[in-house]
Image (cartoon, rainbow, N blue to C red; front, side, top):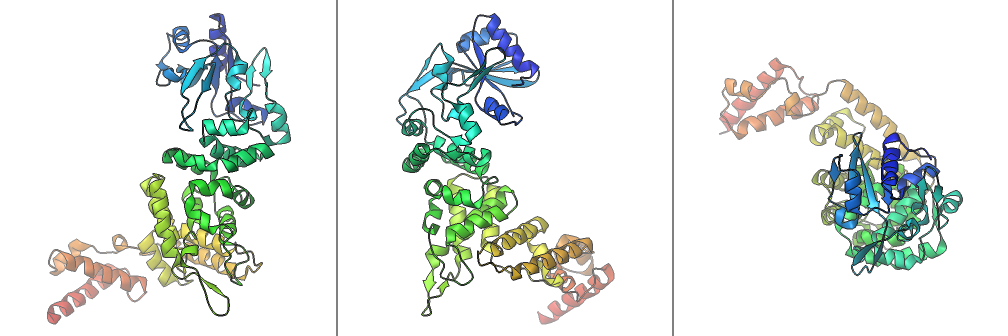
Amino acid sequence: MYLPDWVLYCVHSLEQAGFQAYTVGGCVRDSLLGLQPHDYDLCTSATPQQTAQVFSHHTLIRSGEKHGTIGVVVQGQVLEITTFRTEGGYRDSRHPDWVEFVDRVQEDLARRDFTVNAIAYHPEIGYVDPFGGQQDLQNRVLRAVGDAPTRFREDALRILRGVRFSVRFGLTPAPATMAAMAELAPLMEQLAKERIFQELCGLLPLIHADELVTFAPILVQVLPVLKPCVGFLQHSIHHQYDVFTHTAYVVEATPEDLSLRWAALLHDCGKPAVFSLDESGKGHFKGHAKISAQLAEETLYQLKAPTALREQVVFLVAQHMTPLEPDKKLLRRRLGKWGVAQTQALLQLQEADMGSKGTGDFSQLEQFSHLRQLLQEVLSEDACLNIRDLAINGNHLLELGFAPGKAIGNCLQYLLSQVQQELLPNEPGALLAQALDYLTHGMNHL
């Protein structure tokens, strides 16, 4: 395993002071998988106070000291160095009731979540792998360290992390591990919403449809809004899948953009609430986009998602049934109202939605290439999309004799509508003439 000079420096500094030191966790796992580690962590037999003494001439970050961790700034990098420790008692399924420092790296590895994360490495000794993590990586197996239920009761977030590790690294949970993840998933209700949201944001851009379906019993515990969708048949010739399976394929079909993936995940969550069956046995979901948007907003608010992401997702969910007509005039109006980025994102969501019904009929997808072409043409024409794009502004209207206030805004909006419908060119002379007619008509009317 390759270690950068600054990491080797810290290992050697601790050893020269009489302590053991190993790289551990994600950096070891990633290296074994042939990936470049994003960061490095050390574990050591030195106490936090002893670590601070060894690196007393460096900038130290001591916020995690009570848990055994000292951050050392070396060559502009922050290396977290944690004392070998064991833990006991997790009454809240999150925090250990006590932490005890120990002398052996094997004891420290025994407290970790999965075998693939419980491997230590020393540049001279090699790998320390008491739980078979290397073998599990080779076999693409995700296995809890020791007793799986015990590991997940210690910290319920490990269940969601297990899903993310499975998806990110292509690992299949061992039967006992998967059973414990599913059985103890309700413990995640005790977790801080921010922790859940962070894990889901790490998971969504990576996940495929079959993985969403496989892990549905776990995911619905942290996203209860999706629980009614699992197995909910749509009773429609246009939909082969149940609501959740259709949703899973839509997620996979959207680009790996966080807002789009969240929108895809929640776009049909309101369907079960509005379902009706007509006399012919055909299912209907009238108004489901509106209900889905309301549920999406509630869900993301509870998860404490950033406001900008929440608003973007709610917009996409609310509008995912609004047709984007292949008409330049209407496209200009949509672009003026929604903006370029939101319109393009909506087009991507609608295309993914249309192509994920499982019927094998992709004829309706042809419209999206045409829409995309028209959209590019409109954008390349330097189109007038909003009031700011008009060739005149409110000052020009004041000079014409308009009174300050609402009348100016109403007139500009009227002129924009005329330009977008191609009834009026976006030229100062034509706009001012039309504005004067608007003013005269309005004054005569009064």
